[in-house]
Image (cartoon, rainbow, N blue to C red; front, side, top):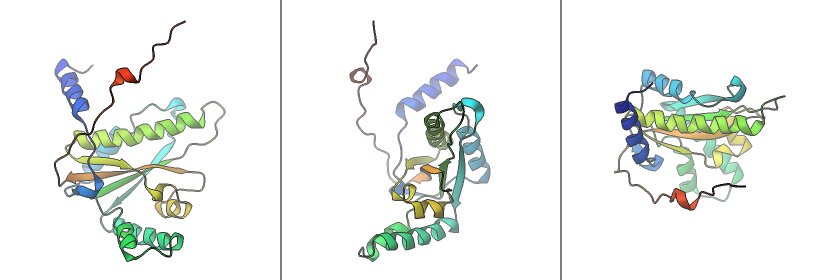
Length: 195
């Protein structure tokens, strides 16, 4: 069991946690050992039936640029009238952060475990990735964008036909001060059920 100090630190972290903007992220990012630690923490999520209904695709170094070129080619197919400025943006879509981790949902029909529960587990992995990266001192953002939904772009990422992209986790160091956004008042969202 965690000590009181550990729990207090964790609560403090969770109360002040905020996502960075991938558009304002730079180095340093996690090294190989740190990334392995982040991924090891990420998989500690609810997983009904121990199916492990997710996997990772890591983009770092030149792979981010090569993938961006492939995404730009796909974008040009989809939007032939869009100009060079749009293609430049797409080319750099994964180059915003030193490391980008795609979380692939491998949810499938199961005799006992609903697909939805498997998808929720994949979403939990995404958020655990963000939390783990931030706990190690990096900044992170969970995004999707069109590359998570277009079949051609998903193929570039490495998702199979029956798989989905739960998100891209951008990990690096913010080059701007992180600002908090307004948060909802939980009391406005709660209904207490009663007979």
